[in-house]
Image 1 (tube, helix red, strand yellow):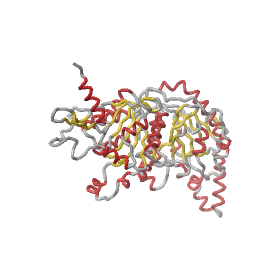
Image 2: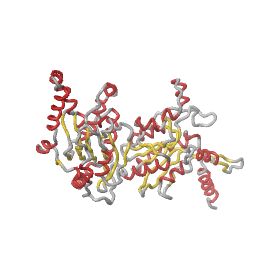
Image 3: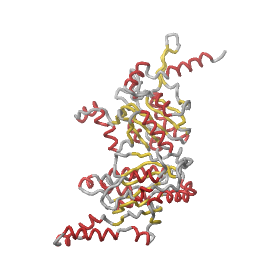
Length: 517
C-alpha cells in the first residue's frame, strides 16, 4: 500500500488551482490589457524563485463516486520569492475569481500576508486588483455573516505593525476598493497604473448614498490620486509599476534591524560638476531647476523620485551616494517658490518617518522661503501640518546633511535641519527671518508711504538688506560647518558619509516617536 492516489489528488488540486477563474476569465483579464496575479508575480520575482503558501487552500467539488471533480482556489495568491536576489513576501488578489472580492480561503491568505512578513522579517509586496467584502457575503447558499469571534485579533493590527518593521511596497493594477485600498496606502511606496482606480466605494454606492454620478476614473483615477497623496507614483503600465517596486526595494534593508544595502560605487566620489557653479542665478527671484543639482551631486542615474505631484514644492526620493542608499529632500522653486504648503508638509513628515524607520541618511538641498501664505493656506491648516513636519525632523535618528543652496527663511526653514545636521552652504545662500521683499514691505511701510519715490527707496533698502543676508558672516561665526564652492558638494557629502557610517548601527531597531502637533 502506498499514498499514490492521495498524492495524485494533491497534484491535481495544484493544477486546478493554477487555472484560477478558468480560461474564459483569464482571457477577459488579458483583453483588458492586464496580467493575472500569477503572471504579475512571475514578472516581478526572479525566475523560478516563487514558493507559494497555501496553494491547496480553496473549495473542492467532488463527483458522485467521491473523486475530485473541480477545485476553486483561494482568490489571493501568496508566497515567498526573490526580487533582485533578495527574499520578499509577495501576494495579491486574483481578479479572475469573483473580481478579487475575497472568498473565504482568499480572505484568510490575505490576512496572513502581513504575518508572514513580520515572522520572517522580510519586505512585503502587495499587487492589488479587487474590492473588499461584498454585501452578499463570501459564503454559499444559506451562509450567515456571523463575523469573527470577540476574542479574535483585530485584522488591521498586523497591517499597522508591518509598516514599522519591514519595507512595504504596493501596486494598484486595476480597480482597487475597500480593504485592498486601505492596504495599498498602508505602505512606504505605492504605485498605480494609468488604467487603474483606487476608491473607497464604487460609483453605484456613491450614487445611492451621495447622489453623485461619477465614473471610477473620476472618483479615483491616477490623475486624482497622484495629486491627492494617496499613491506615490503613476506607472505607464504593469511592467513599469513592477519595475518601480523592484527599484524601491533595492534601496531598502530587509527590516529595521538591518542597514540598507550598499553597492560597489560606479561613480567617482571626487566628481565635481562645473554647471553647479552657475546653476543658481545671481538674480534672487529668478527660478532654477533643483533636480539638476540633485542629479549632479548624487551617484549618476541613482535618483528615484517619489510622490512628485503631491505637495510639488517639495521634492522627495531615494538615491545613492558613493554606493550607499540615502533619502533626498529638496525644495522646488518652480512651485510657490518652494514654499511649504500643507500637502508638502505632510509629504515631508511621511518621508522623514520612512527614512528614520529604515535607517536611511538624509540629504537636504535647501531653498525654503517659508510657509505658504494666504487665505487658502490658512484654511488648509498649513501651520499645524508644517509644525508636525518640523517635529518629525527634530525626532530624526539618522545622519542628516543639509546643503543651503539658496533661501532659508522663516519657521519652515527648521524642517530642513535635524538636531545634529552637517551643514554646508553655497555662496548663493540667503538666510533670515523673512525674505527681503516681504520683510521690507512690512518693516518699512511708513517710510515707503511717505517717500517721494517709493519704488526707488524700496530697491535701495532691499539691496542693502540682501547684502546683509550674505552667507559669509554665517561662515565667519561658525553657523555652518563649511561655506563651499558648489562644485565641491559631492566630495564633501561622500566624505561626511564615510565619517558617520561607522556609527549608524547604533540606531537599529524599531523607530519610536512621541506625539506630534
